[in-house]
Amino acid sequence: MTHDAATALDRAVACYAAMQRHFYDRRRQLYREAEGGPGGFSFVWPFSQALAATVDLVALPAVRERYRSDLAARIDGVERYWNEQSRPPAYDSGVRDWRGGGGDQFSDDNEWIGLALLRAYQLSWDATALQRAWDVFAFVRSGWDDDPSHPMPGGLYWTRATWTCDRNTVSTAPGALLALRLYERSGEEPYLAWARRMYDWVYGTLRSPAGLYWDHIDLAGQIERTYWSYNQGTMIGAGVLLYRATGGTRYLEDAQRTAQAALAYYGADEHLDAQRPAFNAIFLENLLLLDAAAPEPAYRELLWAYAERTWATRRDPATGLIALDPGRPPELLHQAGMVRLFALLAGA
Image 1: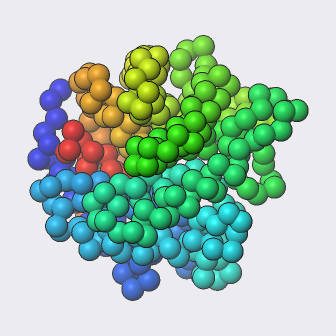
Image 2: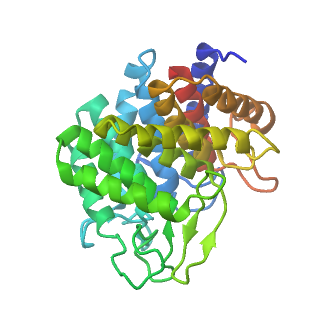
């Protein structure tokens, strides 16, 4: 299958227009969680993917100028989640000044935002975006498990809340990605050291015999063995960036092995379709990073076929919205994921 970049771009633009029409509150610069849903605004995780989707569109020269002002609005909007009073400061899971607001702080939420803001800075030169990426990493590294009595000590706690002490691939591998992007910008060795530390912990703790990455380990030493596509993606991306930073071929080979295992797993039994579009967009983003270092057309073909199926079977032509779950309204997270998928494919 050969995908059509022009078609991918048209679909990215269409999915984005529907996202803005049905979820966005322009006056407050915030999004609703679900189409037609009551009251409050979205959690920061869906907002982070709407931010990333806007960045992905601005990254495309053909439509860059059309969406520059939207990117500025996303950078302003995400500040509504910023908690200056926490130590260290970080993004809360909910809007700070809306009906009590705030909420628990999650490592992965903050990492997705930090990564998107670094890319936004490269496209906009917005100093706030760059500063927040540095701030986010200070929060992220404060969540490192340094208790030697724990099973497999190390890793980043998923949340600073007290209701769970899980250490996850999704909290630790994106932390390595963020550290590596900050190292690329600054050349400061502590960021590279943190990236290696995080990468090695995930590799040594949550890598399965099949070559894919499990979800998390708890403080009883029990491992939750679900294979989420974004977990494979972030470890692939971290491997590629470590290879670029160090020249160590081991990291590139790790990334290639994980990618091949992921292609075999997600290419069978509708495993990819069981994932969410936002998860698969993060997977694709990192597969494309690997493709730039070691080309393999199968990476984008797998995700193009998935995006095509989702467009054909899950999109309402009347609204342009993606609805995945019968009986539930379309959600911002899924819509943003589809924007990202098609925008990434358009630029591939």
